[in-house]
Length: 344
Image 1: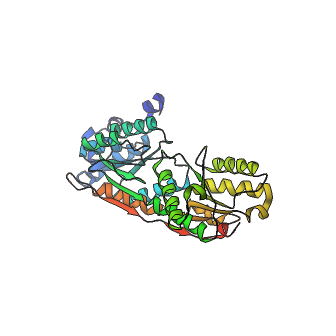
Image 2: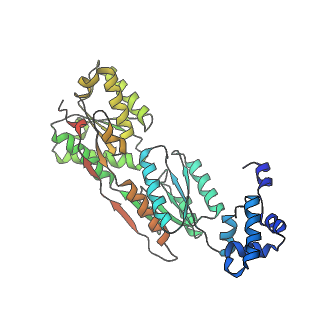
Image 3: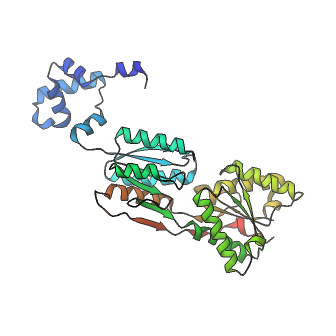
């Protein structure tokens, strides 16, 4: 907000001056209108309308000693997975007339720290955080200062912090089991950096499924680290694989998320149309809305995104001093569609 805009915004004093009443009378009209006479109330309401006066919610909360704002820091709100998580948070907060302040960390620890500080300075009820790293020291400090903290899409390493997560090891195993069950004995896993817990856990799940099938992960799984966890990352990785194979794609590809899988399918379609698409079994992760709408509908490991956000917000609102931490772990589900029908 610019300085000029702040100067032009009417204050409660401006309303009182225009209505010819005391500031306390305006406050009563706003907060306890039943104790103000009809004529006086009408004068104040007329002045409010003329000045386009909007009461300060922050000031009201401070006076009342109540705060109704919750902060949430997600990795990237552009990702449909996190968009749906945010909607779950918002839907739960709305039941208790709370509002949401939302930020993206972009997987940057300094950006995450900045928003944690800003949220605390603003005076939020608490924060919901998809942590950038395993180091949760800042969150532990906030918790010690009395700020409610709930971790999203991650387990807690700090005593007293509640968390909501999905079993990503199980999710990775579901994807690999499906491809192995289709007869594939070579799996290409387009993954993110192992420093990201979800990426490490999904790889662990792949290895678990391969070992359970009596095979050696070192011989079966080829892991390719994506330059970015989005469609462009999947696009670039598949172009490199096609170049390496003289135009022949890998027989089975598991992508760490659906956005990467979208990029993979796009390259296959552009390079060879439906013929090339039909030669490669592709599995994604997250089951975002567009997964079922693609030209070749995408097999994906579904996470209960809305429910995760909803449950995390509920945990935060239910927290009270001394309440024990609660850790909720959802189980993923494999949704089979046409993209994984290829058998190589």
